[in-house]
Every structure is written in structure tokens, then in C-alpha cells.
Length: 103
Image (cartoon, rainbow, N blue to C red; front, side):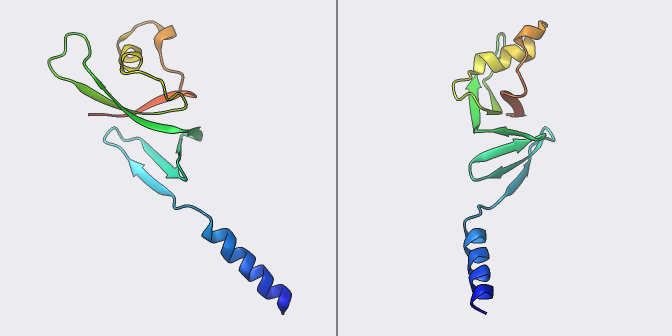
């Protein structure tokens, strides 16, 4: 009986430590999950979700890119250039940064 209670208590403590998983679908149709400050998209983990605001060349208004990334220093310019450039060397590495929404 004591062993049974010990197992039950252990399970309760383990479950109490688990964070809540939140699933979000963006306007671009990207669905990601967030749990304990880690973001998951397409079986990839990202440490940060950033909103990068700036103005692309010849634009009349600012834009905001919502990205998930493992590089907290990624810039608006890098993200916007990855969309505008025709060179594949400028594309974002999806293991490092992915655009999930544009505002």
C-alpha cells in the first residue's frame, strides 16, 4: 500500500511540474505550439518568438514580421531581404529562423 501511494505521489509531482502546452494558428496558416518557453513548428524547436518592425525598400508603411528563431540577434533587414532577394544564399535557414506571420 505504501508503495502504491508513493507511486501516486510521484506521478502527481511529475504532472504538476509539466507546463501548459498552447497551440496557436497564425493568419498565415502556420500552426505552432508553445510549452515552457520553447516554440515548436514542423518538428523544429525555436528558443525565441520575435516581432521585428521596420520598413522595406519603397514601402509606404512599416511592416512587422513575427518570427520564431534560435538567433535572438536576427534583424528586420535580414528577414525582409530573405523574402525580396532572388539569391538562395539570402534565404533564411528554417532550422534557425522561420517567418510565422506578417502584420
